[in-house]
Image 1 (cartoon, rainbow, N blue to C red):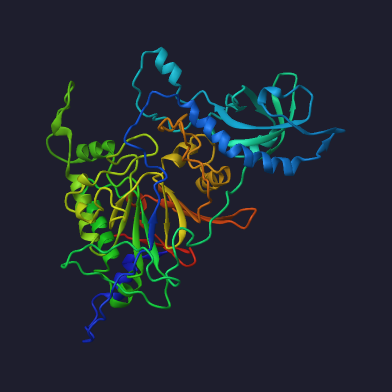
Image 2 (cartoon, helix red, strand yellow; image 1 turned 135 degrees about the vertical axis):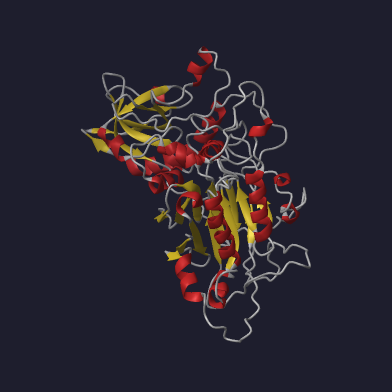
Length: 508
């Protein structure tokens, strides 16, 4: 990991060479966003949320059954051959069989909507429970479909990550207590993976490849120029958490801006940074309201009184969004930005979050595409989750709510393991809508991974992590847990030719 302070120490306070630096130009961005998670304008919330589970089961169950059938076909245990049953309620006591369905984990610490309704809590806030897993044996794993539900038991379950909403197949027998004693578990594994440049044409084959157009501004100059020996890079950052009260953190954000622009580095470093063709911001660009209140209380001076009833307009602080807008406005003339919303950003709370409206950025919205435009602008405000093709690679990313919610189901904090599990389950948000707020889809389930991405990133994580996983048909996926910049001061760089990872730590 490279530290920016080391680069500064080696490049500043040197005698000028007298040579004129070469004019640099930033690498172009081959960018093809998809609109997988975009909701229509006619939103209806009258339908039942259960339809999401039925759609998910319908889409993933055939793949799970195909793998289970190939694995368990002809399996004989104790002189009995395992047979497939179509429904959960078709399981018979003492018979060796296997069945596929949706996992439901019953946890006493989970929020219960029925309990809220019974207590007249009609409008509930998002859960603040830090952990659903109790560890005292009260948690129960069940398998369900449209026919019913059966409880799963067995030591083999301890070796598998299971959360509500994932689709699995289990083999075993029903015991005298009416529970299904599991012998083995199978999942769908990685979905078919498209080839590189499948959504667009490789630049070397056709010079008319769609690229993110440069803003039409005569005063804008591009910095950076690609070198034949070096590939392009994509920068990932999340958790910027712009605040109107934390002045010490503002210096680090300013250093981040200068690093991306290459303003504080020597010509050789600027040449390297010119290969960063795009910045992807993965959620939580604005500090949370709780953090803002805490920072305000820590400031010396007169304490503001809290209004007990009604809306207190004085409590609203527009400065964080203004600072973020200024940050984007200074960066966009040099580099295109893909912006995902997060839990703290001005977007809808339910999954999938819709793009932050460009009206929130009066200084930088000129770089956004016009409504109805076919090509994305240099400021591309997208959904969370988001899917697209960047430099030929299929990418899938989120602002982190899906992974944070899944961590509450398991005793450990193996976030990369949970990211791998989502890919192998072929579902990017399995706990939605049970404990993760989601739109009640009726005709489609967009969280199902129809195709396996080449790169899967999740933002706003407590620390950096990366892993490469492989599938049965040669699929390879680079997993990236993008750390929160406010907590770690780290930026992640991805080489677009090899998908290799490097990190830069910005510290004062």
